[in-house]
Image 1 (cartoon, rainbow over the protein chains, first blue to last red):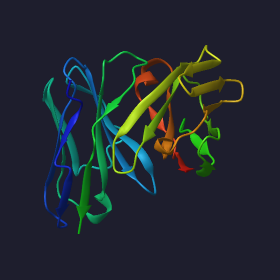
Image 2 (tube, chains in turn red, blue):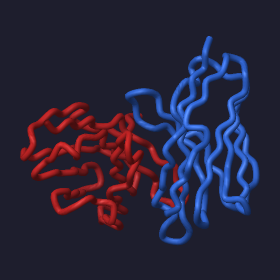
Image 3 (cartoon, each protein chain N blue to C red):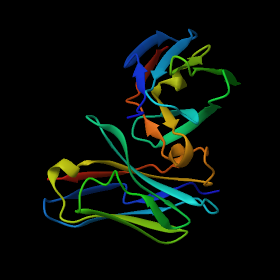
Length: 114
Length: 113
């Protein structure tokens, strides 16, 4: 079975440009999570969805960040405009949606904003 | 914050030795999970222990949980070079917070052949 699929794996862009990261969760999983990983701050939960509905977006850094989940098999994380401090590895993860479920992570999207 | 803190930050041992990593957290939890991350890859779930459990085993992994001390340990026995990775603990809160896994900063484990 395919795992969580993220694209692109690497993105290099210039400050001010729009960045869109994509995620396809594991089929049948009801919950989807976006995390950001940096050396300084570690892994931070940005937002998560249950059944395509955003449940908690308190980790989204600011209004430049937005996330959508139009259907059960696709989610996007958008940064507009991007800034150098957004450089990080962004992970998408999915789970069955139970309260204590393990997370299945994608391989991540490494974003570099120049 | 319920964020876990791992100790040590880095650990280097010889192949065949046992590796012990510790995790401390601050608030009440529903469960605690351990994940492994190889360089440049995503995190992989290793084991989950619930708040009413004290010890759990999975292959060469042994996890303990002491809720009175708000701490957990991960023991990897008979380490192998392939165990070289970063290891993270993650805590799920109580109630609606159970799904919000909060990760620690990780322990970087190096197994020397």
